[in-house]
Amino acid sequence: MKPEELIAYIDVDEYSSTPKYKQLTNAILTAIETGRLKKGNLLPSINELSFSLEISRDTAEKGYRNLRKLGVVDSVPGKGYFIVNTDFSRKLKICLLFNKLSTHKKIVYDSFTKTIGEQASIDFYIYNNDFALFKKMIINKRDDYSHFVIIPHFLEGGENAHEIINTIPKEKLIILDKLLPGVTGDYAAAYENFAQDIYAALEQALERLSHYDTLKIIFPKNSYFPQEILSGFYRFCQQYAFNHKVIHNIKDEEINAGEVYINLMEDDLVTLIERLITNKLKVGKDVGVISYNETALKRIILDGITTISTDFTKLGSLAAEFILKNKAEKIEVPFYLKLRNSL
Image 1 (cartoon, helix red, strand yellow):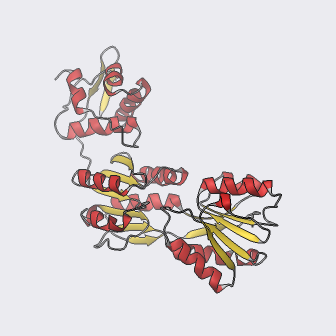
Image 2: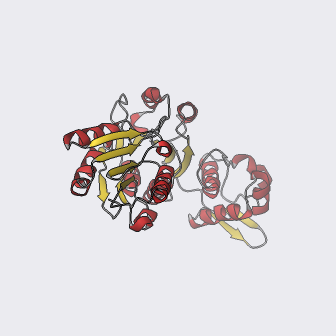
Image 3: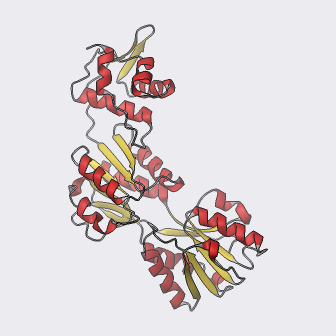
């Protein structure tokens, strides 16, 4: 078979969030496994790949370098790249379905891919909290993978998500971040207990919170954040007799001294800080700030923002370990509190 004819067996999916060089690697490995590519076959040149697949030359070259590192291809100056090893079998073909792409989801992804290793084929998709898109992906790809790793958060329609997820054989299923009622059977999960996590984190901060009289949580309408967060927030405020309020839009909220603000969204944190500066309210003295999800920047801004966060690295590594060790455990990954000068 001529190298240019092999292009038909090499696919790059524009909808996938998997880096294109890894998609190129996976496509060639799949073509070898299915017998379409054989030992000794000359592969398309980097220029041919770049032109036909509409990818950069650097991406094509990186894909070939990755295959060479795996011992699958080699190159001869003046001739190009060719298949040197077909004696392998990848049992792991994994579909990652994440609700959104963020700094924290990238930590999960990086931890997962590092732990799972190079012998697994991974396709990474973002469904943007859209249940219809999520459903379409599951239905279309249900038989294509050995495992599905799913983070199930939806803006609307998610009440039926368990019905779609239950169509996936449980030995293939790993749920991350949030358990869904109605998902049945013996499957693996690494999850957060959202109600208990916020309650426990606020309880750890009780001494500093006692300097304020009111707690406000910024919880946007039509949010994908679990309602269990509010359940834990209400329980804490009632238990310790704090005035409390749920805010849907921080832009319209009156801000007064003696209040603590808990934000979930990064954009809301920026708006909150801008308004505090405008109103000349000192963070950590006049007004307290607690932010969801630890980042390096929050250690620095305003002399340190107090955070409550889960261990995103642990979430990713646990998902990979479930697959590698063929385990169907359900493990709760706890939150931790980082007290800083904003409270």
